[in-house]
Structures are given as C-alpha cells and as structure tokens.
Picture 1 (cartoon, rainbow, N blue to C red):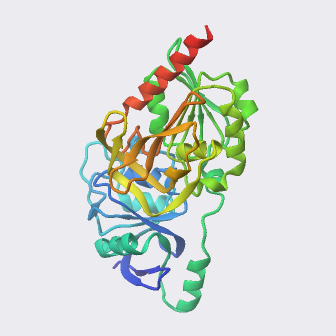
Picture 2: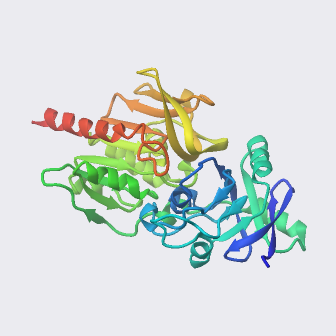
Picture 3: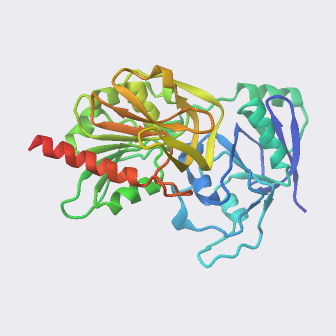
Amino acid sequence: MKQSCFVVLENGQIFRGKSFGALGNVLGEIVFTTGMTGYLETLTDPSYYGQMVIQTFPLIGNYGVIPSDFESSSPKVKAYIVREWCQVPSNFRSEGELDSFLKLHNIIGVYGIDTRELTKIIREVGVMNAKITTTLDNLDEILAEIKNYSIIDAVPTVTTREISVSQGAPGGFRVVLWDFGAKENIRRELLKRGCEVISVPAQTTAEVIMNLKPDGIMLSNGPGDPADNTEIISELGKLADACIPIYGICLGHQLLALAQGAETAKLKYGHRGANQPVKDLKQGRIYITSQNHGYAVVSDSLPAQAAMRFVNVNDGTCEGIEYHNIPAFSTQFHPEASAGPLDTCYLFDQFMNLIQEEHAKCR
C-alpha cells in the first residue's frame, strides 16, 4: 500500500496524494509544464533546479526510462508531481521504469493529485513555494518553512566542474559552450554542424574564454534568477567587446541582455512546455517552441543597440533579441527542443552563418 503524503502550498492550500519514487519531505518552488511527452528531458533539465514540477499531462512514465534522452546526467528537479504514473512501461528503447529511476536519484514523487486543479491555482495565483510532507503536524511551522524558502546558488550547483572538449569535424568551427546548466542537446546540435565544442564552467572568466580562441560562444540555458549572476554578467560584458559571435539561449539570452543594459523580471507562472507560440517579427511567421523559464527580458528596457526579433504570442513577452553593436543574437525559447518541435533548429545554422561572416570580415 502506497504511503499518503501532502502538497502544502504557500497560500495554505493542501492537496493529498500518494508517494512514489523516494519517500520523505522536501521544499521547493512549485511550477507546471504542459508537455505531453518529454518527461525524461524535463526531469533531467538543469533549468528545473530548486523546483517541484507538476506534469499537466495526466499519464506519465508510459515509455519508461531512456538514458539517451537525458539532458544531463541525473534529475535536477526537487520533486515530481503527476496525476498517474505508469508502472508497466512499453517501449523498445526503455531501460527501466520511472518509480525506480526516482528512487535511484532520491527524487520524491507524488501521484493521485488533481493536477488540473493544482495547475489552475498556480496559473491564477502565480508561482509559489510549497512543501511535500508525510504529516501535517505543526502546520504553522510548515507554512513558515515554505515562506522562507528560496532558490540559492542555482547556476553554481548545476554547471560543469571543469573544461571539457568534444571533438568536431576537421575544419569545423571552435565554439565555447558557456555552461550555466546546459541541456545536452545544445552540444549535440553544435556537433552535428561539425563544431569543436569546449564546455566551460559558469565561473570562467572572459580572459580564459578568449585565450581558448573560439570562433563563437554559445551561452546556455540554466536555472534561477538571472540577475543573481552578477559576476557572469560582468565577464559577459567584457566578451561582448571582443567581437566574437555570440548566441544566447534561455538564461543565456537573459544574461546577455543584462550585460547590454536591459532588465529582467519574474513572470507570474512562466513558460514551460513544448507548445509555446512565438512570432518572428521580421518574417511575420509563427513558430511553436519548447520553453522552460520563469523570468523574461523586459521589452521596454532594451537598449538602443538592441531590437526585439521574437515575441511570445500568448503574453507579448520578449522571446528573442538581435544586437546591432556586437555580432550577437539570443532567444528565450529552446531551438534544440528536446523535448518539443524542431521548428526553430535553423537558428543554429544562423549562428554558423554569423561566425562565417565574422571570419570573412577578418580576412
């Protein structure tokens, strides 16, 4: 018989469910994602560090555990909340099932909750803190704990620990992947294009990066409040002066904007899922994109040397920027998808073209 547990929200509302995965108590920021597939990518996406993730799709785990789909070496979520989990997965690529996977990595899971109702609360009230607990004894203390929780040291916790090199094709571009919690598929897309990919930790200085003599710099996704990363923003400002082509994705997009003088703000409930529509303001075309972020660049704060390229169709927030003073552009959404549509994967090719153009200028 499964053990009962409770999800206690910061606003005092309580949901009763049952435990799967690891057992215990945990605090976190509670968010929802609307992806119908891609639960493995969600679990292993470093951008979810410090967060409890609600999966809005009602049945999770039906295709098992597939390590080749992971976006990092292990789950980064604080907890995982689903309506129902599949105990007998069926897929020729499966190497295990979800319950054992969560137990292995000590991730607390909750099922049997009305995830639709829970999601609607977060959508209306906004993202908040929560605690998963096996007892409601001392509820006042639990609510105080929840209120005092905050995500700290997000990027330093998930970044790579050392510089590493993934060899590309002969004659390919050398790209530094500045890792703030990079999804593995960013590296894969660069390798597909023949690039030598040098992954560097978040705390790497601009001087060290320039000494690697990159043809381009990729700023990765990552967790937490972008404005917390003051040292990275400062170093990024120095790199912008070096005129090396830069492409920023998600957190990288926000950090580049901050380094150029823009501002960021927390969204009410963020964009998380594989069905987010964005409009290309140059082409007038709509793309369906994969996203995972709780902060956005404030459109009205863009400096004169920057122009908004993409906008979110649902709420009008900034989804992409082109810079006129430096060879750089950025997107809030994930062109590498995983999981999600590959509609905007062409942006990696645009990055390659930008590098090629800068090479031509230097000849």
